[in-house]
Length: 121
Image (cartoon, helix red, strand yellow):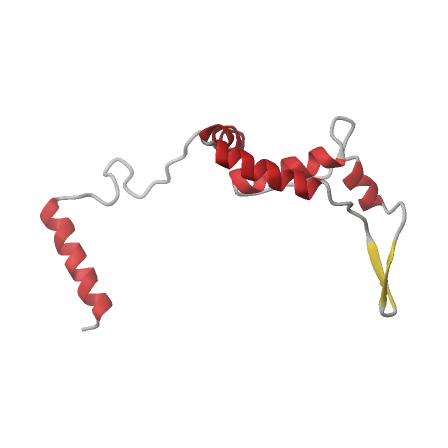
């Protein structure tokens, strides 16, 4: 009997003795959905701590200040492609959002919400 098996048995005995349910009986194998959304995560995360707000805000500002552009490999040298559609999109994502706003929001969603989605409309 390995050490892992020993500790698993010990844990199961302790759980049985304490009459602890690892999964609540009302769930019984069914998924539980919550109303926690990315918007809630961002709002709550920024309000939770001044340190969280300061760190993520600093990171978002740094990422948004980078000049983003498109390059292509020609031979063994990278050259910038002027007015590439992707570069234009990154500079002005939509009529309501600048490129800086886009990247700031991207960092907030990634760090506080855990994921970032982009879609073409």
